[in-house]
Image (cartoon, rainbow over all chains, first blue to last red; front, side, top):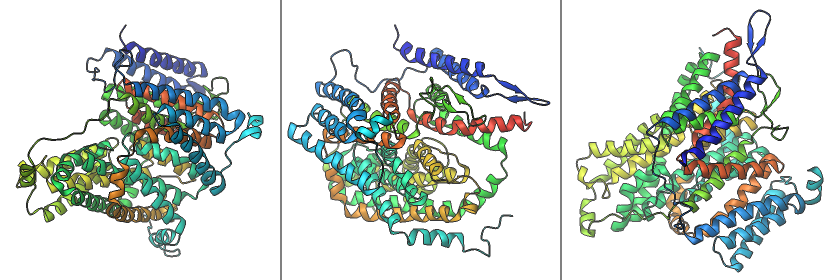
Length: 159
Length: 468
């Protein structure tokens, strides 16, 4: 199956969903003497445009540009880059899971340590980064600018 | 005829001057913006849209003028920073800096790195200042012309801007058109701007719509990280030729030529900056080609010609400054950075458009003066800290990206005030990586996302007003 299908299918789905959502909401409203544009008109137009452009892209011949990326599946990728990518994904998941329960300070330190290690830094450097960066942000943003960043238990109850 | 300078009030230009001159916080923030922009420009793999998105939430707690002036400083600081890596390492930090690399790196290899950096800094300054003067001079003309535009005119202008983005943007017409419509679709969830009803909120999860901050941080912050990890390591674009050959090829009698090249580049850059998408790259390559055509030593181009360095460098900074004109006077962002600035203006309660210099003259002229201040700071920092930039360019990426990742997540949490921001940020990061792998550029998507609600309101106004 052509890799193009992976790009086209989600785009066509999004376009059809938008188009249907627009049509369901009504393209026109009845005014006193003339039809008034309904809340579904713009979504229907945007959905139709996306659908037509995606189909045009699908059938156009001038669309194959050489990819600047290394293929992920043929073992060609550098080990360091693979480690970094998995570290980045894990750090994001860890931060998103931890923040509502422990607050952004602790979750940022933990996720930063993980990401820094995965990036190829030593444990000492990663630990230093994990301490310095959140502390710096805390003093600059929360203390310096008075920005109320959601943190720990009050944040949990707000969720 | 518009009364530009009402007699009963202080001259708006003076108001702007006092707003900048009497605000030390603004000076500090412009300095911080320019510094951060230069750092971002020097670091390969991390672009100015991501840096602006990181500082975007700070504009919520700042008065509009200092906040926008800081974000603007990042923009033109990064333009200059891109030139540093181009000249010293042969790696363009920004796409606009590729033309600078063609002449700057051979000069550095010929042992004239410091002179090349100084020439690039002076040319950037010259381009920026020329564009600021032209913008100030053209403001009354543009404003008077824009005031004649009705709803249909404004709608057509926005539509033309999106069509130009699709035509001129990176990635090709078909891909850009898809991105434009995807941006319009992504702007749909949330509150309908005309009827005030909820739509496409996925059961209330997207009630507030897609967050601009999270989108920018995801597409450009996390997107840039993924991009740099997935791409092969950059190759240093060394060129052949002996040292003697390179020395001989450097254009003679070039001081005055380089100055006039910078002036010509400024004019070209200003004109290109008014057109949506790709302005800086187009202007810098056009300037390089023009200088080669006008030169008495065209054979020296590509081997270290001073005119080929100063022309593109001035044009790319002039284009950066000129792109503020359509944003401020027409409310039309011409690139993703201007789209972010439009968001920041809206948050600050500033309505960009032809009436801006008339109704908020202090802000308008204050911003123009802050751009001039930023350019002077850029000159001082560029000339004074060239060694620091050179050292920073060699900072390992493994130390940078984990910090950028954390800043993106925390920035989106600040912007949204809840966990929906970081979730959207990660989603857009993954989307950005997938789009870039498919050869799509996220820039048209962001522009269409910002213009979407305005286009919708314009269309409904036109139909309701019986213009169809």
